Image 1: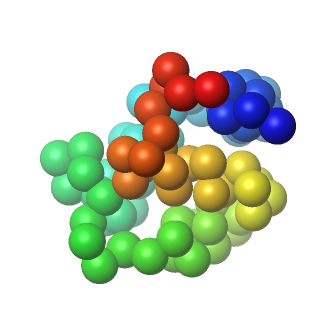
Image 2: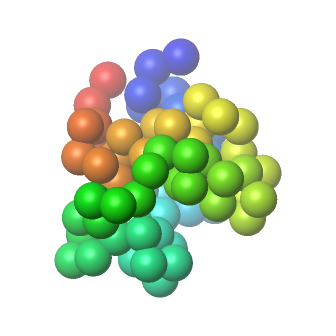
Length: 76
């Protein structure tokens, strides 16, 4: 699945796009000023997204990549 495919499926399942998920991560304390905090591990993001939004591992890792800056909304 492409990165855009992951984002589309996440939006369909949660109703949240990348900007909203970034805001949620900030509310949870995983990010500061739009940047993932250095001490936050992928497993923490995956656990949060699985518990709160029932996302699978691959979809959660896509959001982790977005938060970490590895990918952005325009990545394929």
